[in-house]
Image (cartoon, rainbow, N blue to C red; front, side, top):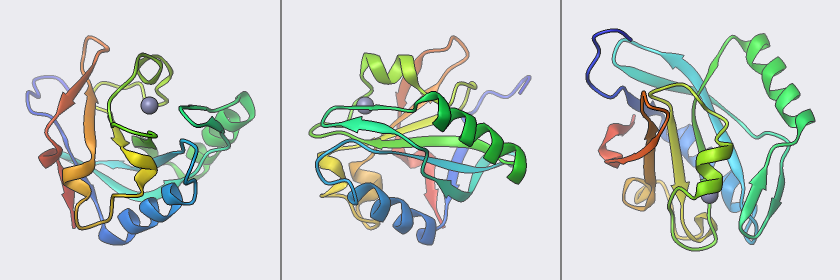
Length: 154
Ligand SMILES: [Zn+2]
């Protein structure tokens, strides 16, 4: 938004965070991606639903095929929500790979992309903020790592 300098924070309930962790852990040996849907508030994005898209995954890879993108877009129209963050797992360290930069599903400046290590096996709601690697898309269309203190669990 014009004149806005500060990064919008990201707010999620403990219940939706638990649901996210359970979904990601359900794939113990392949990457998995989940989308956090919600609304833009005055200074924060509020997550009010999660969505698991149709995806093709492997040990160090995920991709959403065209049918998955079509299903996602029609779901967003129906529920009138936006994607505020994507969150995916890695087999080992959490970072934003070149493929992650290139194939990110969320593309608006200020959007969040979160990455969890070890297929989420070591992450639980109580250590989530320590485990998660948090990235934000800046106005130059570059993913920058930011502090996970931008995320609030309510
Ligand atoms: Zn990745």
